[in-house]
Length: 241
Image (tube, rainbow, N blue to C red):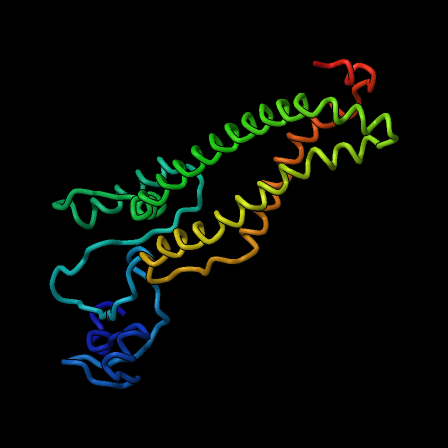
């Protein structure tokens, strides 16, 4: 209540402050009394831990700093104009300044947002280069083993058996690459997450999904060439030089 002497002495702190200083409800702090303990929330980025803080009501003096207003999402320009008009009626000597919370949060994590864009770009680039490399290598291998394919087909080998034979070597190298890359990626991710006080754990299923996707891309690329080679006329294959 405005100009209430009772409210003048009331304070509210967060859980961290209560634990750190041993405060409980009713604790006298200076000229005030602790009347509430709120759950912790972070005022800054998640790289930093929650610090102890307290709120109190002051009817005397100019302690006003920032007023938070939740907008309905309608006509933002009209709403801001109405807020500015009301603000100028109460504080004409102070310029009206505002910012949106989502823009402020984006600034806190601008470095991470930039990293996400760079990682996404180079990941897509590496996938494209890998597909082109596997496609070229599979074409070369199929042509290199064209006589072997012809002999196997003459001896009764099915198309699926020929495809398995051609795909086996590529699958082996994908598995070896995945085995080498997984611990490196795990260490890099953990090192990056260490810069955050509040962070999630690196789950194993992320690597499982990544390995499955890599294997699927490799198989689909190689299978295209191996299927063409397996369908080649054996007579034509045996004449190939």
